[in-house]
Length: 189
Image 1 (cartoon, helix red, strand yellow):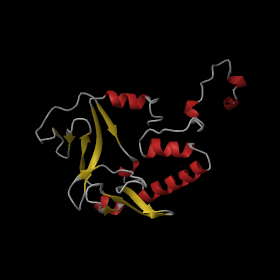
Image 2: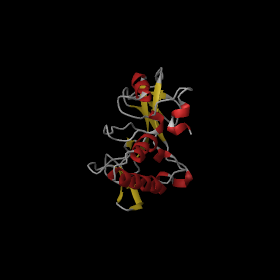
Image 3: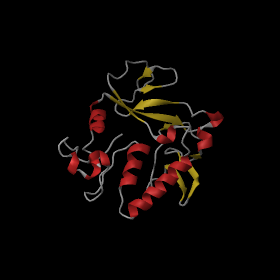
């Protein structure tokens, strides 16, 4: 789980890996492949929905701007097939279980690999629940509590965040008390 941009050991390890892969699905409308992306208000692609109505969520292809629903993604109860694509080299690992270069020729796999996976790929997590979680965390952020949104960005999107200095830190960022100071530590009680 990545934490804060520039301060995260997971981000450091991913940056040092020879390959950084994301899972790509094929758009059923245009045939181009792409990862499932969060998108955002300023983007024409990614997850889109009517605010306050998480059940309207759909994913918009960054190439043709057509949509798929989670039912389309999980046709037959199984996630759509795809492949792992390396962002730095263009190498891909597909359903044939062979690493291929950007020209499609079999090649050696990267010596080290960082993998990015979002919760949205899981057939066990409804896209509408992800959107509902985001909307609730956004309300908390608007009230000044960045904790839930940081957790959403880190764990659900699998991304690191950039938070204002005044944002509350998570419990994992608390100093670890020494055995002699635990009697005075308010969270040790």
